[in-house]
Image (cartoon, rainbow, N blue to C red; front, top):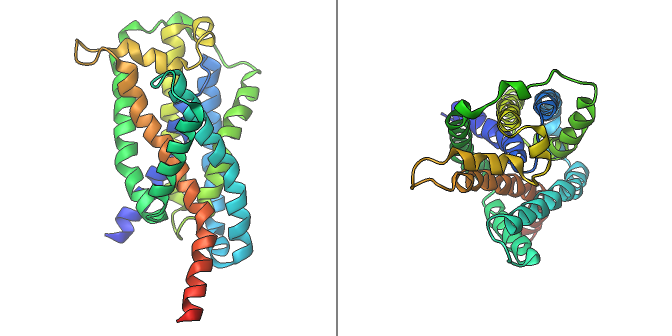
Length: 274
């Protein structure tokens, strides 16, 4: 059972990373190509980095280095999430209040440990992928193939931007994984990245690159066009909530990396006093 469940949890944890980026990505057909390339590169790097996890988990210096490095993607995730919430779902609320609430939520989840956080990631990733896929299916009739463009040289700049968003968090998590999960981490990253690319492509074909460029959160706005009857008139809310949970899961997993050396130090002191 352990051999079957642990890889699924690990894959789900890494699928959260590109799924959370759906909220913040600018959109064009070039973005879709860039997202696919960046996710593939990140998956390959993650597969290699995860093999170094036994070393980083064994010694204090790498653990403290990872804890410090994890603060960068953690703060970035929390601040972007708070700004998104303030501009969309909680208009008029204090930005610092939202950052505080999200930080406390991430730390409370992280207190249960990395394995339980990954367990929590599995249903969240499943729900998010289902909602995203449903949003794409419901808007497929409105897509305009005329908006499709061939890959251009400029997509490498966008690839770099998406790599900058994905890679720091992916490296931190890969270097703190239990042994034997490198393949699962790469599969999760690839699956989430494929959905990120497809949803960006859907939005570009739905809104057009020029319209999407005028919107701060084009994927969020495009999801509102998937309304079904009176029950789901605000399709963008149904779309955003599981993705916010994905970003919260990413923040909680990074918080686990930040807290890991502190927990180890506390455990060592407890043994000394015992």
